[in-house]
Image (cartoon, rainbow, N blue to C red; front, side):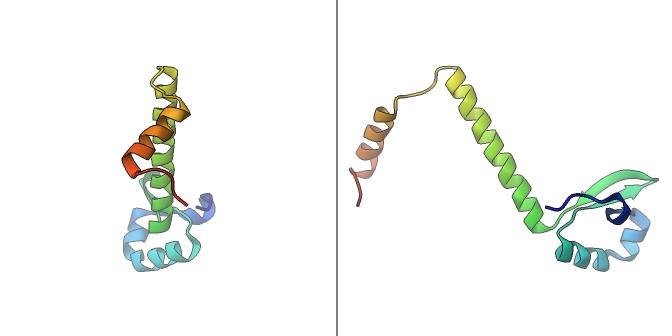
Length: 96
């Protein structure tokens, strides 16, 4: 996702309402987020579907990594050999 550029990516809600189709087209073309303002203050951010998917995937990854680190710090880990043994038992041995 491209960085927000204040001169290009902030738009008052009244202008956005009047030109919504144009802004959606621009969003698809540039993949840059658009900040919609009300009374001069940011009120919302419009993202392309691709940018939204990218952000949610990153959030899932960070959450999983944080959870894994917490498990390791709490001692909730198993040796690699135990994991391999469990996988073989569950999925029927080695492949290929």
